[in-house]
Image (cartoon, rainbow, N blue to C red; front, side):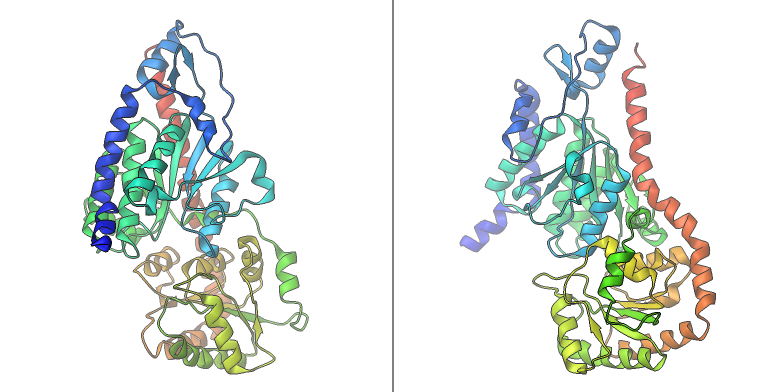
Length: 459
């Protein structure tokens, strides 16, 4: 009985109904923006005094009512970013850091817990983490509490960005996917520009996740699909406002070669190396150990030093545990294990010098292709095929079925027989891919400009 009650209280359509009621109540109640200060870590931005009797002030108060506060106009002073789950996932951390590198001004990051995301020191002064544990993953009581604070934050948000990645189609958790889309719809109702940053769409989305995202896109939420295949699938599923971009990590601006060099300190100077990642999501550890044993031996036969590199370390999909098992099973002093999760800039430093990468994690592939380094990638959730299509390198995709080791070996031999040919091909695609990645951020600038023009069109 308790289990059934818990399921009912976490049912996204029920949460969405309550969210709409909260929004309606808030619109009818007196505003009190000082409530923004109640949450730890959320600093209220400065406001600009504007006469409500001025023509521009009246126009702005009339056509953008969420900015008007009792005879004054509050200047939108921050961007809201709804973060990915994080908590031991380098890909999630890389997306957040890339957003910070490409988005000016004050930023409030909404996450589940304060330890899910780390803020680099250079962005500390303008970035604030706000933990709203019930916003996406909560059941009714704690969801409503988080939603009330989210609605207050929306009052002075300049824009809202939601990290899409591979968590919008319901493949992992349809409740969370539906709730993210519902948050996008809700924010759009307040007049703030909303976009869902570069994400994949697998073409067989959960019905609830699809319905929620259709509603959000129809309300004006901009959907940034991160590869042409995902964009095709999204349009075929009836989604509106589809923009074709690339994963935003291709727009990253930091590479830490010094930190990478320190991690590789035990390798002979000037040695060629391959990075190998084993994903904790892909089947049993024992089966993968045997597959990777073959792959590693093949790489070594080509004269490459092999570096085992985990990318995610958390319950339910721990690469670090699996990489340790592989390292122990091979018992080879020449095999280097990086026994922790480096930061994204350090990962890009490692991939910059690699000859080849073999990975079960898509964002490690992205941070390799970032340097035109071939990344043989185990394709999951229908997302890797679209990434490789961007580069015209579909040959680098491997189906992670039993026996995938032999497929990886065959591609390895092909790539290493003419390594510079493939690198030149990948390099030729990079300028366009990076430009597409930057569209995740320029789209919002256009929306903000259009909104400002509309507000003053009645001057």
